[in-house]
Structure formats: structure tokens, C-alpha cells
Image (tube, helix red, strand yellow):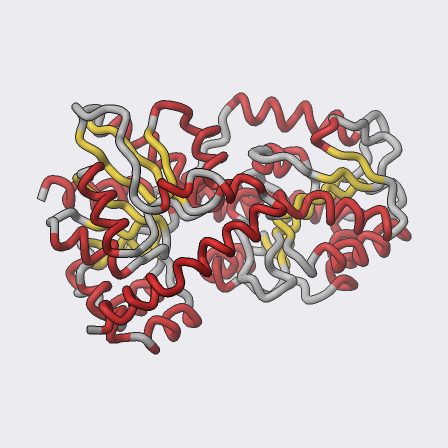
Length: 424
């Protein structure tokens, strides 16, 4: 009965959902396209191969899935991967990362008819969901058709667990239907079982984001970019990555303080969402800074700030900077992936809101590779200290990198879970 009520509400809200897509299309026109996919109208390109369906809701999950997709392609060459997402930026990342080596579309809305239509057309042999993008009707429909559902690299914060607990009549059956959950940490796993996941279906595999691959090509690109940005004067480069609304102002306040002590510092500012690029550029100019844009290939010789207004380059930016701040953390957003700068051996800074990466931030902070700051003044002080004490910055970077290296191996453990579920 709870799922029936949920489905009725979903259908009633569908016009509102579509209006929201139109509203978002004002700033990001791609939201106005490919609506038919969101209602389950999709046909795989190769009808002769069995499909493994992998869902990555947006950019972060897509990037985390890159090594997994490559491993699945190597392990199951007779299968075709279908990768779904919910956002245009996620779609762009999937296309850029995999091209036509995979099928791709938007995931169907969690309405019974859309899900049924999609499953009938695709007939997947397995559904792998990245992290926590769970939908009751999708899970139930797969269970009914005996399609294994794996929650990969799963995390569940206390806040999210409380939310699921408030609708236990709907969420408990869904958790009980999951074939396997490969959780990042034991605390995540305990929350899943408390919400209804059978204990035998829980596996603690670690975080596959530690298994990222810094190829020779990306290392060379980062080195070239660093030389371009720092110039002959070797100016220090401070990267503020994946910033959110309300956070850019704090970064700019901090940078004003930094410039008073380190006048030649360059801030590379990368907003999380592309629809905010121009807005953040305007904020930089209003604050009195000279601005260069990455999308224009502007020179940074005389610029105070380089606006990272491109997609798909953030990993390279981490390799090119001296100090990295990971955004979504000075506002109540839960933070973003600080494993990436750690893998490069960069001293890493973050705000206090890190519930999306609670275990990662704990490991890095305890090892001395991550410093948490609460406001603009504290951020500025941390950056100035690291710039003026390069040995301290190098030591902090080494400690971060050691944690990144020590926690690799989650991908192999996840592949065992997937193989057992697919063959079983």
C-alpha cells in the first residue's frame, strides 16, 4: 500500500516535475531535451548482447564509475553496458568518458509504466546503482523480474538514514529487495541493515574513488598546465573546486585576505554547476579582481582569478595546483571528493560540512593530509601558511597521498560482489 500511494503521488506530481525541467532549461537548455528517455522510451544499440545497466545520477557518480565501467568491459566482453544518469552534466561526462563504447540515456522516472517500459525494451541482466540513488518502483520491478540489483560504493549518512526511517513503510521493502550492497564503511553498512537490508546481503568493500587512475597523459597535461599558470615567477596556485551558491563569496573574501599577504597568488575557481559559470565570473569582477576564463584560453599572467568554466578538466586542475580546497563544504551541502587532490599529493582544505565524505575526511584529517576550516578568515590563514611554508605543504600532501594509496582495492572487492550476483 505505501508504494501504491507513492506511485499515485508521483503521477500527480509529474506535471510539476516537467515544469521544473522547463525552469531549469532557462539556464541549462539541455534540460529541455530527450524527455522521451525519462519515460522509458529507449532501445539499446546492440540487441545481440546482454545488458548490464549501471546508474550514476550525476557527475560525481559518473567519475567514480569510470574505473568500474572499464573493469566490467574487460571482465564481461560479451555484455553491453548501458549507463544512465539524471542530469545533462552527467550525460556529458558519460559521453566524454566512454563515447560509443557504451549505451547511454536518461534513467526512467520512477513511475510504474515508465520503469516497466524501460525494462521491457532493455531487458538488463543486472542493475548496478552508484552510491544511494534508490527508487522504490525501480527496485521492486527489477525484483519482480529477478534482475539482481547491486548498490555499489554505497554510502548512507545519518541524515539520509533518518529520512528513510521516516518512510519505513516504503523504504524497508525496498532495502529488503536489494541483492547486494557494497558499502564504503561499516557505519554505512549498519545503517542499511537497520533500515531493512538482510545482513547476508551486506558487503563492506571500501570506497572505489580511491582506485582512480592518474594516467601518464593526465600527468603530462597537469604539468603543462601548471607551467602555463605559474609562469616564470612560479606564482602559487590556489584551487577552489566544485563550489556552490553562497560559497563563492566566502572564497572571494578569503582570497582578498590571501592577496594582502601573497600578492602574486592565482586563484583557480571552479563552480560545481555550469549554469553558474557566468554568475560566478560576475562575482569575481564585482569583488575587484581581474579575471581570465579557461573556456577562452585566456592568459593568466596578469589575472588574479582563472574561472574554470569548462567541463571534464577538474582532475587535471588538481594536478596543476599547489593547494586545493574542495567545495560544497563551507555551505551545508556535505562536501565533495577530496580523494582526487589527495591522490595527486596536494595539501587539501575543506569546510566543516563533509557528511558526504565523512570517512574519507576522517582518514585524511587524522593523517594530517586534510585541514578543515570554518570560514573565510580560517581558509585564508591556512592557505597563507601553506604558501609560506612549502615544506609543511609538501609534508601535508605526502600524508594525503599515503592515505589515498593505502585505501585502494575497493574496486576488486566490488567486482567479486558483482560477479557472484550475476552468476548466482
